[in-house]
Image (tube, rainbow, N blue to C red):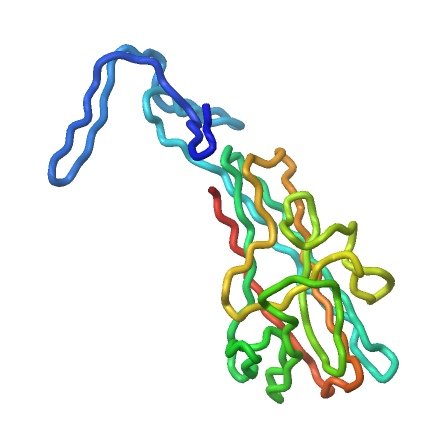
Length: 230
């Protein structure tokens, strides 16, 4: 049973009962039910009866690290990707958010937070794309880093079946954005449970140097994915 604001995950028909409380405990009881309690087998757990604890299962896969093609005098763009598989039986769904780490000596960007992709030895960094709005990929007279996402549950990142328009060329139909320091940014959400095999959301990351060359060196960004049941 549900309305625009609420959903009842499970209900019970019974008689009697009352809410009782003390300084340390709260008890709600009832009469009239049979077959209550905890039952289990090798594959299932059943919690039957009045107000049994309604638990939710959450699972988030761990993708491997992304390694992108090095930029050079002739290579001006690079694209990488990683996918997270979300599995949940929560009837209200989930949100999947990401954020970048904030590690010195990564320099601050124009918004006063640390750029996500930097060289830890030299403090050089790729400037994050704009953090306040998503847009098609565009870099001019700079070297920049940004992200996008695609999948059935991704939100507001445009539509594409992958991250690229061509080999190591950022997709022209996805909408890209910069990380905003440690601020959590939602990339996927659902208002219902997933299938038993889960739902995949793919994070796309890209860099470009245009009109200027990025200082040589090894650059890295650390991101964290956070999965929450609604």
